[in-house]
Length: 194
Image (cartoon, rainbow, N blue to C red; front, top):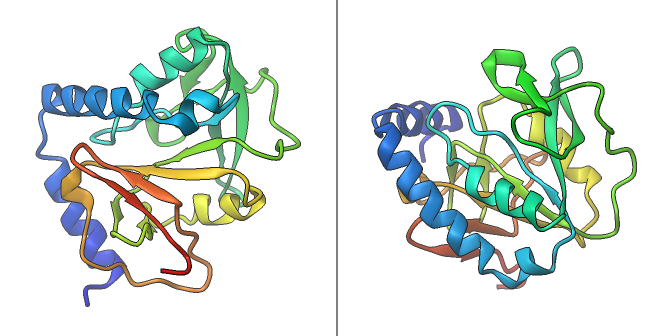
């Protein structure tokens, strides 16, 4: 089995070959699928991210969520402790600024999410996923530290291009899986008792 670092390097190299047009088209198609999912339609709180580089873009989903008055929260990195905090945004242009590593983040003067509601929908980025909904991030552990703070009632959905799905990801005790992974070709669901 490949190591996490080998998988990360291989998938990032492959993903970075995608054209901007291909990323946009495939991302938009994926977000249309997401908007049709009952879990999205029923959600009132959405934790999401602003894409960076060749990541799946959530632009279409974020616009729809804001248009439908859903509470949308985006992460702001805290590099000193390798953690993230989520801030509510109301406008994709006015409420974000360039942050750590050039990634768009919510401005600090916005409302920070202090208490998580009992349930919601969390859209989780990743470099690679497997059919069992295990994920590999960029290696900083930011989401692995944050995800345990979400109650089990929060639905965690990873989003990725189909090429980011690998046969199996080595899993450490601190790794947090998603409940589902949506790609442009498939929806994987994790069943704990399967």
